[in-house]
Image (cartoon, rainbow, N blue to C red; front, side, top):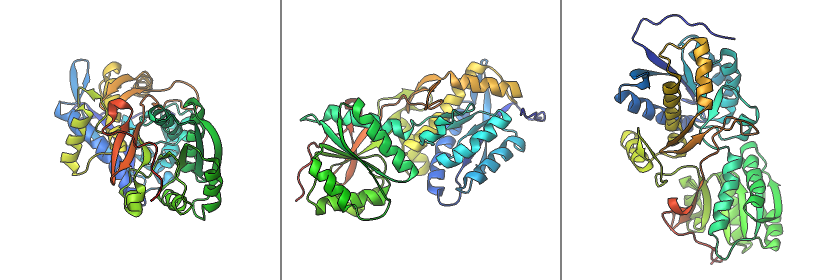
Length: 396
């Protein structure tokens, strides 16, 4: 349903609506997304705004709090479109809120660029008006195995996969499972386990199979329990890789020296060899972000800032000044779909068909490993800051 807005009296300014978790359980992640989006708007406005036909138009941000609730996120998106008359949306922190907002974008024909959503279920719905910067977790999990297998010496041949039976973690486990074949690994076991409970039977079964690699999809507590159980059974594979949790300081703190050697996946780090004309190199972006917030940015904050680069590129190619008419917003959606750019975050190009429709699955994930209590990049070669520890030493 097209939405007709009123004329604006002020100077032509693009209005961008941000929906994220500014309160509730996901406020920490919500602040990450806000910081990333704000970094872009501050940087582009410092240059006079986005380029349109040789001129520049400033960008104004409007914020909607989803209160860590998908339903509230949908309501916030509708208010931003109807009351604030935004031209485009930047998406929520969580995949659940993102999925809830997608029908609102479709209803009002307003495009959304999502800098955070990682669930493949966002893209399996084939949203016409939503575009994702971070590759879905099922692709990054699988690709990371290819990086690990290529770097292993002696070459890894077998793998066991454990997935915690909850949506995000299960999808991660499925990504490891499906990526094993492409990485040239023989899958000897795939186990789904509850988020809580004794892992001894599952670890005992896997230990008997002696896989070279054990890959795990799960959040911090199951990962910590898995390492503790493996040590109690004196089982240590040549490599242990987990998608989520390794970058969380709580993981290394809970396990102390036992966390060393555990690998994880990051979509972006300040050490990646990417750059663009606005933010410069990945390292320069990280320095800019840290100066503003006092925190080194993670890949979510970086992806949200890159969302603005996608918008600026699409607006420049569209060549329409604000306020955008209904047909202009549809044309902006089409321009975003044609994105093919290189940024400090990495390459961005959206899929045009299949289960990852409108997701950017171009970036190669960075393999990280805990060494001496610190998380360091170990692969691929161009992003590595240290050598991969492989095989892992036996428990002492």
